Length: 232
Length: 397
Ligand SMILES: Nc1ncnc2c1ncn2[C@@H]1O[C@H](COP(=O)(O)OP(=O)(O)OP(=O)(O)O)[C@@H](O)[C@H]1O
Ligand SMILES: [Mg+2]
Image 1: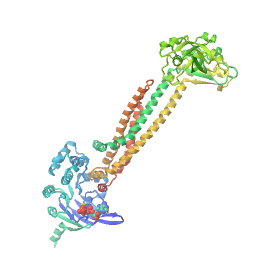
Image 2: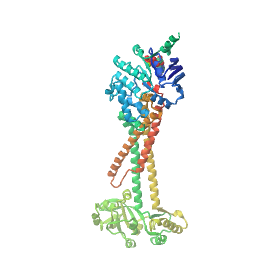
Image 3: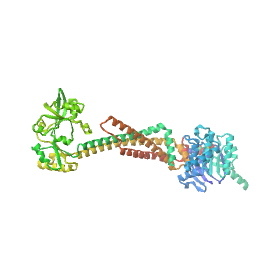
């Protein structure tokens, strides 16, 4: 599903070059549930933005379903983001001028779903994250955890094949966090590929594979280790 | 898609009501200026040309500039205007003068003419009679006064009052005249504009009072009908050219049609000029819109990033901002046209002599122009928004 081939991402700030990703190679198969961990600034969000076709690589190749994404036009990428990927941002990125319901509805609008169908899907997604009673509120009139759940609802409403979640439980109490993790596990069981960034070792332990980043490269990948253990 | 973009645009406009209104104001004022100015000029133009035409577009004015020592006499007129295309002629001798009634003196324009003048002008009487041939033969000191002159000098305020004026006397340039007739009030706009304080006296009498010598130096000729005007002009040109020994510059013939044409040419240029100035102010309004749209794009950078991240295409983002600019322009245009209607109605009420109405053509122009401005000045900000890289836009604070 996802393949990084010697991917680097550099940022130039004030003449200084930061290697946010430094020659990263790895692949994620369809149906995997991957946890990405690493200290702050290790390149987790950068990796996820590239996976989500939001950012371009500096060097190397990123392949999504076997296709290098540089082959796609801007509009095709928009379509991929809309149909295949559900993105939960670290800082939610909800539109404050709209209600939670309208925020969740937005990807369906860009997808061209009819109004009655949209209402049904939005209701379903909000129910799954337990936010039905806040549907008419705007994001800045609800709590951080509720905003996070709204962002999750927006990511899953289109039923995407790939869910990318940047700290989806960071603002949630452990009970709600567990609920959300259960939801992700269900989605994964239903065949969705999930990549989840987290600092929380407990949350990471609920995924099936852990990739640890440090200074822009993969320090540890539990899949490699397991395979390695199997080989030796 | 378009409906959604419209909803989004509407939300953005409604979210910033004051700013949207101030932006619109540029368009409102531009449209207002355009529609009101052009409507007023067009209404005035049609009133003036109508009035010129009602004076008879079968009329020719002939001025003799150089009589070559052979002035035209009244009896020569039959010869000069003998062609069957010419129905009537009347000599005109204008004198500047004063009229003294009682102890008061008034400025009047004294017109020496004959009875045909009133037929050509289509004048009507409020009281008394017109000039007669006998008045000219006898060089009588009689006068027919215009209603306006009677109002001024004799203080009448109704047609009934005009009857009392007949039989009174006035001193015209020091000579005593008997008022024999008062013309009915002329309500046409031309008359209002020229505000003719005219007093008509027999041509022969005026000739004696004038110090520029005798003879006809100006006359009106009425063609049989409006189709014969050109032929009448031709006939007069031939007759006068032969009289003045082939010198075509010795006289000038003014065609009423030409006058009306010139008049509407002038007012059309006027309308274009005013319209142009108003269009420039509309353009300035458009630049204001572009400015605000650019601010709006910058302010909403993050929003654009979010929309792109969840799948908005380039066209979707562009449409959103273009529609926003268009909606601002068209709402401004609608308000501008409505306000123009109000102003034109007010002007009409203030000037009962004239009827002003909104010109349909200029409204169409205003709507098209506003739409064009919305598209033109919305395009650049919209392109700027649509061209943003999603992740850079998301990071924008
Ligand atoms: N737009 C940018 N310009 C310059 N440097 C950047 C930019 N984005 C990220 N970086 C740098 O790249 C590195 C990786 O950033 P990234 O956001 O991927 O970290 P992260 O692992 O998600 O950290 P956190 O856990 O704090 O979210 C950091 O050193 C960061 O400063
Ligand atoms: Mg991060």
